[in-house]
Length: 231
Image (tube, rainbow, N blue to C red; front, side):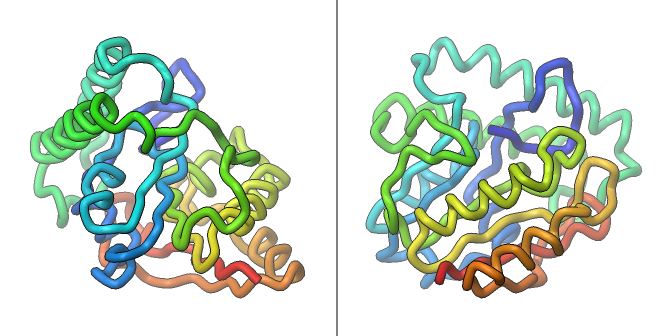
């Protein structure tokens, strides 16, 4: 699906994150992963599923990217990483570098995530399901915890309120225990206008919803995740 706040000619830029980054972005503890069934929705070229599968009962990623063979995806991923790193060099002052230190380190994280993804995608294709929000190709209560990184609340200019409400409704259908969404800031570097109205709609449907701080910041001020507990 999407990862990172940069506009390109296509609708979204396909890059991924490492397991270590997900741990910080979603404030994940060992008990959140070990012995549980996990979903990375909009997993893209991320390494989370590959690593989490070694600790969890199961881990699956859903993304429209999946389906072509690894060798067909690799050039697209390499181009996306190169573009992202170039953009970061130009816009370095717009980001917080406490986690990565510098652009080159950030680029190494992107490369590591893509390499881990491609290797696991080749050997465990069953973990990577082609699909997209707001209609996930998964059954009710299919996983314990669903994670959504750099998709919802990021692209307010192209994903409207109705999409967000439908997407989170379907995620709540699929997840038995929790849905976590990070970040809550859109491309214009402000908190998404859809957070509160969508949270209110979810509460009206009986879901518990809260905002929690996380120990990660890359986009200034984007240090919160939305947590939904299905009814």
